[in-house]
Length: 240
Image (cartoon, rainbow, N blue to C red):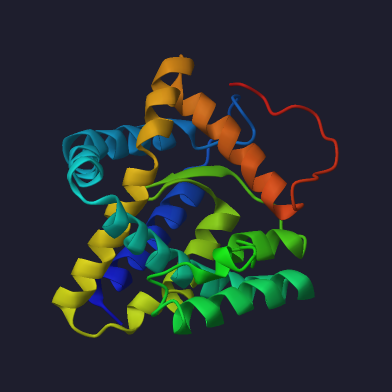
């Protein structure tokens, strides 16, 4: 497995252990007991994003032909669909598993390894699922809110799901050549960041405290994901 992925998993495990060891027992938001640490990591992520990721993503979006951008997005979307098939199966969802699986087959063959999104054109819907969602489906609580270095918002449960995805759920890990792996990994990161450019502009416009706003939206979204968009009623999440 590529060294970069192993390093990311090691950093993730180290961070989780450190956070567990320094959990605050004082007041504050019970969903975010590590807020002080999370805010520091969030500030680090923001500085890296502003200095490197955002400018490169903006240039990619402005100067790369739209057809090429769509091709890149389709390819990585097809890789995500492969992992979604596994997780929809683990969540005992036959329709979602079959339809997303059919997308992967069609896009990987007729769509030339996912470069062309034939599945959407023939009416095959995408049902995205990840291992964090699978753990939630089987009753595991989300645990405290976390901000992961470079990866951004998460929870303890989702961080574990991310580690599993990095280990067994990412086909890119099968690339043995370090230069090829780095190129594909970087292109995926670039494509993902470019897709969030407009969302970042809107966030700057509406949020007085971007950290709190992002935390609120993320936790609500992940809860909605676990319950397929229809979560049971619960008290509103605290704002601070």
